[in-house]
Length: 192
Image (cartoon, rainbow, N blue to C red):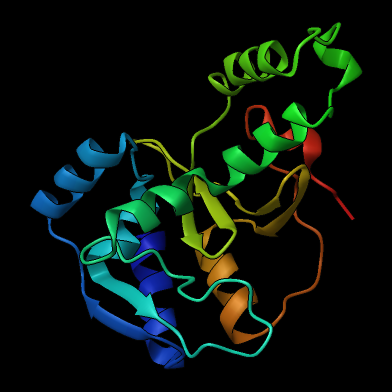
């Protein structure tokens, strides 16, 4: 049983959200073409087993619809969810954030953003799972960590998709795990 299928079955057993029938291959093809993304293999298996679409909204919760509704969601809302993290960090750069290890900051905010976007092209593409929890995308990949991302404040939220579902929805786990590496983003992860 794949990691994604196990994660989906665990989520369904927790009865913490409404789950619709899983996405079909045709739906995955449409979504990936429309949004220019690739789901990781475990994320794809997770969404093919069952598509979580809504959770009860809690007071103070940042996201009204934390699960991306890949089947029936508003395309502008899905695009905003996909772009949320990169837009956030790009705005920080526009407003003056710059890492010394990136070299000299370009003079204008426009040029700084352009230089930063070129750096992002080497970054692992992040695909939202739930609210601001992201999994690196890419066909042929599986078992990669889930990150909680808010600008450059990034933490590991699960060593893989199954561990994430347990930590987010079932019970917090303790204990260290080997720090995974994700191109570009891993430099900003708070290991504590």
